[in-house]
Image (cartoon, rainbow, N blue to C red; front, side, top):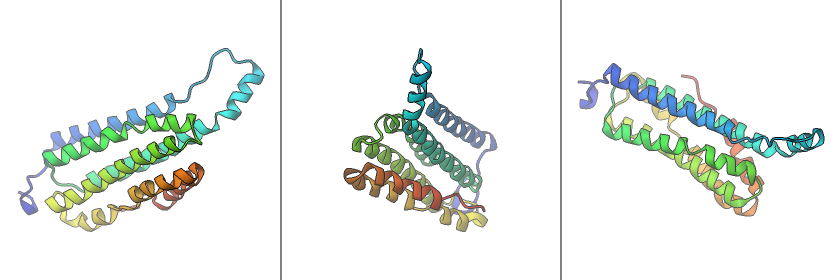
Length: 197
C-alpha cells in the first residue's frame, strides 16, 4: 500500500487511462481544424476576399489550440506525479475530457460569430468549466493521497483557480464588449504558461 492507504497504480490500467486521455486530446485538436471550411468554386477575387474575411476562424483555431495544448501539458505533468488512482478520479477525468472534446463546438461559433456576446459567453463557460474540473482533479488527488510524496508540493502549486476564474469573469465583460472578453483570455494564456518541474 502507498501512503494514505492508496493502492499502487497498476501499470497496464494506468497506461490505458493515459492512452485514452491522449486520444481524446488528439481528437479535440483535430476537430478544431475541421471547423475551418473553404467554399468550393471561388474565383481569384472571391478567394482573396474569403481569406481576408476568415481571420476570426483562424484566430479561434489558434486560441483553442493554445488552450487545449496548455491543458494537455498540465494534465500530462500532473498524471506523471501520481502513484495511484481510484474510480472517482477516473470519473473526474472523464467529465474533464467530455468538456475538453466539446471545445471545438464553441470554437466554431466563436469563429463564425466573433462579435456575438452569446458565442463568447459559451466559449468562456466551456473552457472555464474544463479548467475548473482540472483544478478539482488536482485537489482530489492531494486529498486522497494519490500523489507521490516527493511531488506533493509541485502538484499543489500546479493547481490554480486563476484560469477558471478568469474565463468566468470574462462572461459579464462579454456583455459589454466581446472583444474585451477575448483580450482577457489572451492575457491569461501568456501569464499562465505551464511551469517546468
